[in-house]
Image (tube, rainbow, N blue to C red; front, top):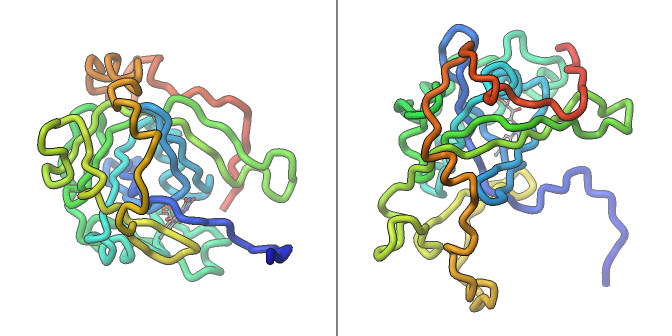
Length: 246
Ligand SMILES: Cc1cc2nc3c(=O)[nH]c(=O)nc-3n(C[C@H](O)[C@H](O)[C@H](O)COP(=O)(O)O)c2cc1C
């Protein structure tokens, strides 16, 4: 029997993504999110406009999407309730957040240089994806209480790094799903994936048939620094949104 219900959160389980970005002073920020999914070589994320990450993404147009495995859960948890925003936005103050300027340091993740973006990769994460912001969409514009609070960003992947332990033995361009153990957030709690539960008819489609046209373009993308004149790199804001003040 089903019950009509009003859950306050609808986080039914998505992978944790650690987004590294560059602050105005050149220091690094690292923040966990879990509102993320992938379409081809694009990633769609949902993030609060009051976060330092959202501000850095809008200013620099670049980031790294680092995917922790279940093995990195303690370091990920050390990032919870911290923000790179100073002062801490009022809504976050009420939830127990505090300002932390060195999130790599406190979490224990090690920043290592990227090739195509200025933001660093988090070395311990088995998957790291350098990305450019393609477009920004506001969410909840039809409700004045939500307007300006959340945006989705379409991120274009420009380079992917895979740790060798999760790569298919016979193909360096495939992740072995039996060995990739993503960290999942479900209703604010951390989980891993269980074993495969059934054979998959969808998997009869060879992975090469999913090849995205973005992959050829990504191969030729060079490093773009903030403030350069590359107009293609400036994110396109699809609809106007007003960032709410802290
Ligand atoms: C596991 C986990 C998942 C989270 N998912 C999201 C999310 O999808 N979107 C979001 O805006 N914040 C999410 N948060 C909260 C952000 O991490 C939080 O707003 C943080 O202060 C952002 O850091 P920043 O202000 O330095 O960018 C999540 C936090 C944790 C611990």
